[in-house]
Image (cartoon, rainbow, N blue to C red):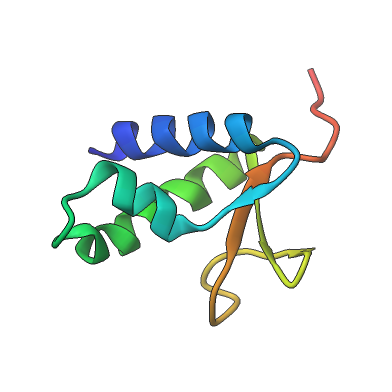
Length: 85
């Protein structure tokens, strides 16, 4: 499931580039109509893993944040930082 969530996040942020997506959009796409809310912790964890890998950024109020260090709604976008390598 984690890999499915990460892949869905990457697909959605690529489709929306340069915009952002809401974690609930991912949960709704992957989950059932009644059970998507149960996926929210998993979606947020998948987004954080992708952020740690430099593939996405998690934002709040337009500022990049780290989950666990912020409260309230967040957005996910394709990474804006230059990638090293």
